[in-house]
Image 1 (tube, rainbow, N blue to C red):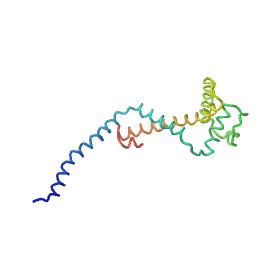
Image 2 (image 1 turned 45 degrees about the horizontal axis):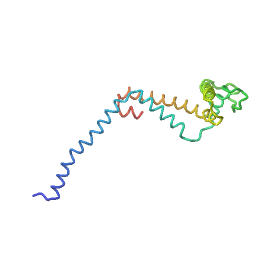
Image 3 (image 1 turned 90 degrees about the vertical axis):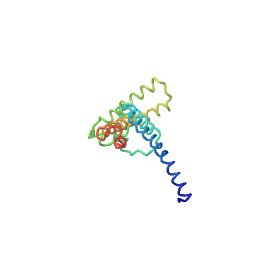
Image 4 (image 1 turned 60 degrees about the vertical axis):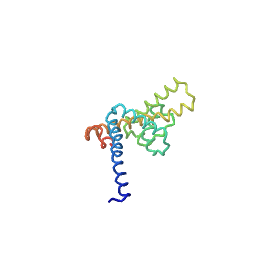
Length: 165
């Protein structure tokens, strides 16, 4: 004859079995939902995440980030008397101006937007600080997006490896 504790344990185990099956259902539904996510949803999420990240985190920038792109961009956008700190590589034309020209365009658009919106000098300065960060965030989001798309091609749609990429 089985002890009462043993029969209670088997009863508890038998009652738990259907609950384990029920717990698997939300996971399956979650995986099905992931497979329904569109590429546009992923891209918009990545852009929003990268912009939020770029504007909210106050970390240290290496001086190279300024001297090799933003300072030359400032000079391109606002002229040689604008106070940009130009390093010897730029003075001797040893670097390509393609990357800084992108940010010079961003600065120009920011100035025009600031005029159109009639921003105060403080808000104008904030816009000039935020614009390159937002631009770089969008570029990074597209890099993330295409890495994810490559992962989906290699591992299959909705696969964990693709999402990890």
